[in-house]
Image (tube, rainbow, N blue to C red):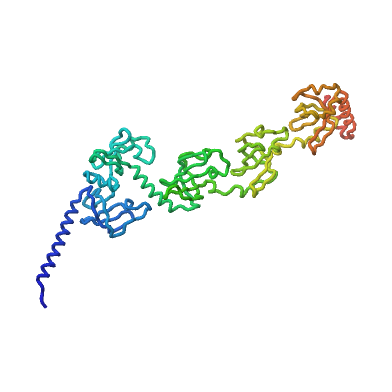
Length: 485
């Protein structure tokens, strides 16, 4: 068997050339400088870092978070090539990044500008309208509106700090550089929001911070760049006129997601939240808690023409109809009796949880003065009252609060002095005789009093005393003897 020495020589030459070339590459890569743009091959994707073979003895690494796409996904696989910048290096590691920092030439700046590559910069001082920023040993300008997502109230707080910026303007061969930090923050926020949206479900319970309050509700920040809205009707089971009755800007509250809809942009969502639905509906237990005839305390929430609404428990309101407001006076306007925010005692008259209706009474809680009429007033009794109102058919006379009798026009001519009562005004005092009592229909008929009739009434009282039984007479005598002594 023969041997081809030419083949041996050629093979050796190819092997030597490959070795020499590899050695040359290693030497070249060992001379990497901070700011160099390099191309490498991904050899490993870890939980927090991605390791890249850049042809040197030491592999480079880049934070995994820098490489994620807008959906928060890793767009690269092991073996893929990638271009990055050397941002720091020592004997043990080479750190790579998509952001440039350190010393670089104009070409590097133009490359960063054209490819929208972030650059690292240090805020050196404030200036008119913004900040001076040192980027790759060149001075750049960052407008104050582009420094942060929020309004910059104290610009001096940013001086001396190092951030990543995006070059938005590069002119006059690097003499006019304008940068923005806000754009990068918005991009990061959008990524974070998109990842957060994937975790959301209707029914989820989260904590958030109130950022804004409007007449119709409150906006709640659930995560960076993600807000939801609690409508005023979902803040509390109780009726609210203003969200600030229960929450304030800056408050941290727990909310429940009740709806998620597509927003104005492709990556935006409208999130409806609720605070009250974290608890049970108070009407579910209303029937067990409130019984007809119960006397309870509540707060007047609203006055309307036909009555007033009273909250007797958080989220449970009942209506006091205008006819149930008072026994002692005619009520034409509910606000003459109660006002919003006032605490009142009411009696439950009807409770229908299925229809969410409870009828209440103010007057029954105070007591019905007509219950004592049969004991206090008798037919033929002379009493004193005040003229409440004059009508064509007669005069209404108030005997006591809640007890009014009618002096008919037909009885006016029975007065000892004809025409006397007609001359009296509303509010004047007048003496009358009780002619008829109808406690069931709440009616008392009156006629004018004169001295003779008053005498007859006194005689009636005296005769009534004579008709007492012997035991009562002896008791009366004993009381009289005690009074004389």
